Image 1: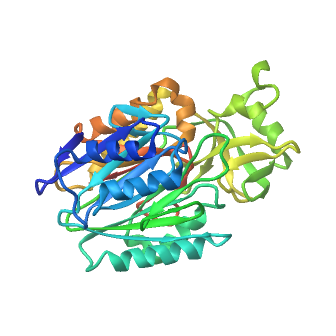
Image 2: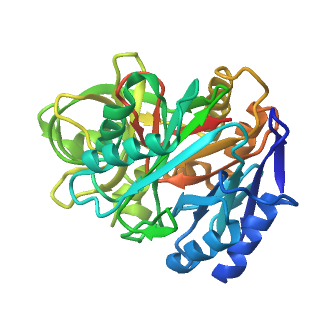
Image 3: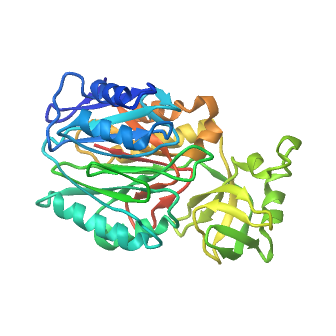
Length: 392
């Protein structure tokens, strides 16, 4: 168990398992996160397994092993805790309630109405969290393949307004998977959104950074449909984009998108920064396929980064979150994008290590997502290739 001392003497713990058997993996994850403690029904246990498991089986096993604490979580591309990264396995994060209260709600079978589904889940989560305390954060976990994830943010924001920060991530899977999973209420879902209302007597901190820098000239999106951009500045999107990043090498000739995984698009924001959209693929008809929707008229630039820049951004996200606290940090939940792993490569553990360092070596646990939710101010809040941190 890796743990940090909470202000009221409780411990925040993380655990991992790479066992193949679902029951054994769940038992090991929970046991290592709990240490010698017994969970209470008011506590939460976050779980992030990869889809190498039978998800129904590991979901049920986690519920049994962590009882009476409630299990919340989702499938992951990979997961991590402090200095360990698990590309195949499960990470668990034990969050004792202490003086806080948690409300958990979910909506299934989202269809095309992510807005209403999230709106309903957030409303019920807030109601379940009980009497309002001075500080509240809404944590969201969604089906990362369900559609425009901006609708998840809009649905949550319609209830939380500007007074409640949002944080979380879109459930992920392996590169060739076409389904993600979510856990809440003792159920395993494949097309759901989970909302957790964290009601606390002491401040909670949310930080979000990406570490990408613009290259080349700005482009205006002149034609787009959903998550596919067809034209920049009135010209074919792929032609303009590739002129900014250079032609793919011969090893990637059959699928040029593989050569530009490290070159997302940055949407210029009114604040002067950029919101990142990951390039997923190049459509045979010349469209640029993004992981996330983008509107016509948006001003964008191609972005680049490296291991040091991403690592520094992760540490800064932790520092930003800590700034909201009144006491030393007790631990953190981290939501980092699968796209960042493409740049980190074998150095992926540098990110959780940097975050832990930013928290004074407090424990961290989280997963690689298909998109991140983070909004401290304003209505915007869906990101790609970014890291979001919730500090307790």
